[in-house]
Length: 484
Image (cartoon, rainbow, N blue to C red):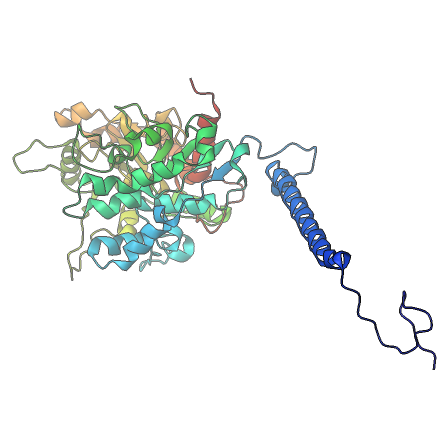
């Protein structure tokens, strides 16, 4: 049988045994050389991988992520937003900690931010309309941070890198941070301000903060009035100092009420309502419903007395409530916290919406203190009820992105001074408005419904712009402008 001879074996060696190679300097160099070649190959592959990742990340940011072809107009041009990757201690951990605590305040806070911020689904025992299945939830104002963050996760023009973004969103849950300290006795200012100082320090070390004028392209969202985040030591010992810190002053903030007395980059957006549609059809069905409602009351008022003591001066809220209670044409619902075991409806969203749907006009005096706006102003518009204001700051000076400049199209302004002096009758003022004008105003209110509601964060409206969409357009317009 023919035997194979290894290449290089001496001729005539037919034993089939391999010879042990001679050990010498050259033989020792071979393993080291092979190892070096492998190391060079690994480094070359790694360099190529990094290069390709970098190139494709640029392509992503230049628009391929949005699906437009090269050479086509970028539909996200000027609309890119980069979301800061904050550590969870600034957002989700706040919710986690609230849900772990057993005190009443934490339990309320935990219940408020469930369902992506919408709160508990409503149950309507009357006709089954105001239910969670139809988009109705017991939403509280502090949940705006969570709602906005969840909506931003589905925003169509998110940027992978901050360098191409017009705006940078900071998902710090400022209103939830405020809430966890507001009802806690013995909390000092250092404790209240700890998270604000922490997030400011974290942001200042990020490259995107220094790239464009120390965070002037950053914005955050808080379900509080601006004054609750502007404690500067000269006023009441209340709230946090987030918006008066150097970092806070540089950023813009979307808040429920802007500050009318101090220079701040705060912009007012609507209070969250109880209605969170999932589709355009949800919006259209609700608009048709409120158009066809028969309204029992000429006017309605939601709330109670706000004077601090029996011998203190009555507020405009108290004067308006007194006129409502004295009229047979005014529906009144007094709200308050339910005591343990109480059978009172207290703060029932379904009862509130029932009253607002049964009135032609809804009365919204400033609630007192430094606040000018009531959340019911937006709930009443969702109910198709024409809002009646007593101070321009309640709506006209603040919500300029979401409400028409010509306020007479959708609302009534009754002079506060006349009501205080008892020289102006609210009922007589409203009855003097011609029926045709009332019909036009109600239709305008119904048209505005989508602009004052926040759609369900787990869905997206197809063609209708909601309060989130309008707020994003507004802040992008502000941040795209060159700063003086």
